[in-house]
Length: 166
Image (cartoon, rainbow, N blue to C red; front, side):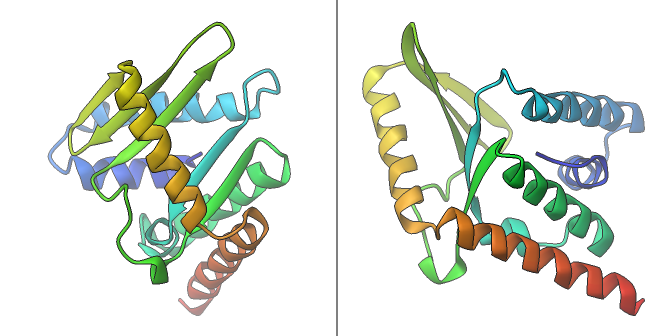
């Protein structure tokens, strides 16, 4: 879901001593994955974003505005459903890292759990069920998709105004 400028800023922040060629490769890979979201044969993605994703400046206000507009456009094209977990919700069940759930028509579900510098594919049914419960709790705590889209677009406008001031 990331734009090039946003992805590049994320990778530089995460790996500040990496060679530029390493960052370039990471960005290329990330953007290739992002391109999948425009393919109508790929299943729709449902994401829950912590409000910090909207508010933490990554790559400056111009990069943030463009990244958030990109997410909003994917929502409007019905390629993703995005829900925002607002700050007032406080601590939540996924503070340790991110998780991705994958369901298949002819195979058991999987979960990919990611933390600082690590990621593991989980196929143990009990572990996958815990991940599904975690996701369900996040969705229940998040604001509606419509309210989330409005918040994403509002945050993009705020970053646009910052760019205009400078």
